[in-house]
Image (cartoon, rainbow, N blue to C red; front, side):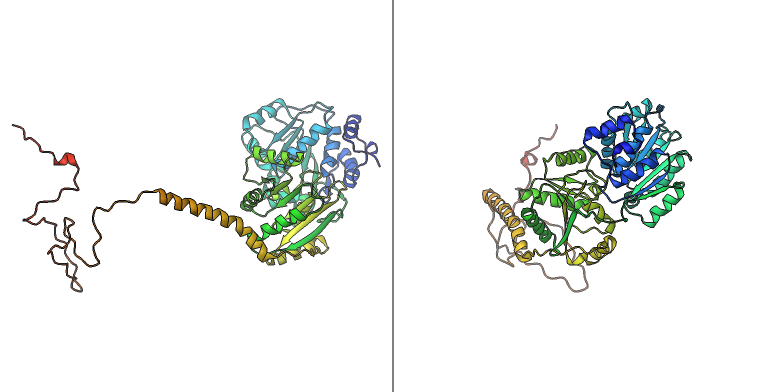
Length: 474
C-alpha cells in the first residue's frame, strides 16, 4: 500500500514524496485512516516504527481547513522531553512546508516572552512539555478550550518521569469532545488506567507485541568487573574492536556518570559529546546537532536520549550501565536498527546486574546472548591506572619543585635540647627552675609574668614606633 491510498491531502502527499518515502510503515498504514475519520486512537508499537509521522501527516490534512485564534491553539501535542518536542516540530516543518501553519514550541530553557508572543499571534499546532504548558496556563497566557485534537506521545515515558498527574490536569482543561491520540511502546497498568479514563471508544492499533525489540538489532552482553574503571576499559576495547562502527550512543543510568565517562573518553583520545538533563537547552541541542551531522561519532547520554529521538543511522548502542527498568532497555536499543537498517546493541554486565538482565530477558521474551569476548580485567585495571599514576607523579614533581624553590627560613635561635628550661627572654641556661608538676586533684595557678630585677626588659618584639620617646606637653 502507498501513501496515496490513506486519504491524505495532495499537499501532504507531495511533501511525503519530496522526502523520498513511498510506502507507509505498519503503524502509519493502520493509524492514519482512523485519525482522518476523527476517531480516538491507541497506538502501540515499538520504537523506531514511524509513530511520529502516523499522527503528523493526518493532522496536516485536517488543519488545512480552519483558522487559529490568539492564545487558543487548535491542536496540542504533549512530549516528555524537550528533544522529542523539538523533533516533532521539525517533522511539521518538513511535511508542512507547503502550508501556512503556525507551529509553536513550549519547552523549558526558552524565555517566556518569546513563547508568549507566538501564542498571541495564534497557533495551529502547539507542541509542549507538560510542565511548561501548565506554567503558561496558570499565568493566564494560554487557553486550551479550543483544542480539537490532543496527542499524548511516548506515554510510558511520561509515566516514568512522573508526568501522569500533569497529563490528567491537562486533559481536564481541554474540551470533552476533542479527539485524542495516544501513542506508547509499552502498556504498564498505570498507562492502561489513563487510556480508559481519557479515550472514548478508541481504535487500538498494535503492530507488535508491547516491549519487543526490533529483529534488525543484534544484541549481546559482555562481562566486566564491578569497578567503574574496569567497565570504562571494557567499553574502550569494545569501541576499538567494533566492526562497522559509524557512530554510537553510550547510555549511563546517572547524569553524574555521564559526565565522568565523557571526560574519560576524551582523555583517551575518543571524540565524544555528552547529553543529560542538567545541561542547558542550547548545549543539549548543540550536542545532538553535532551527533546527527557526524561531527561527534560518540554520544554519552542518560535516558533523556532513549525515547523517540530520530537519528536513523546510529550503528551501535552501548549500555555502559544496565538500566534498572526493563522498559528502558527496549527504548535504548531502539535508537539503532531504525527504518529497516541493521544495528548492534551491547550491554556491559557486572555481577550486580544479574537481576536486571533476568528482568529484561523476561520482558523481551528472549535471552540476550553472552559475548565470547573475554577481557583480562587485571590488565584492564593496570592500563586504566597507568595514566592516572603518570598524572599523579607529575603533580608530585610540581609540588616538590615548588618546595625546593622556596627559600629556607633562617632560625634566630639555636635548638635547645629536650627538657632544657627556657628563660622568658629566650636565653638558655638560666637559673630559673623548671616548673613542678601540679599535685593531683589541684588546678595549677598561672602567675603573671614579671621580668627579673637585675636584667633590662626585652622589647624586641615591639614595633619601632612604640619605642620612640614621647615628649610630655608643658
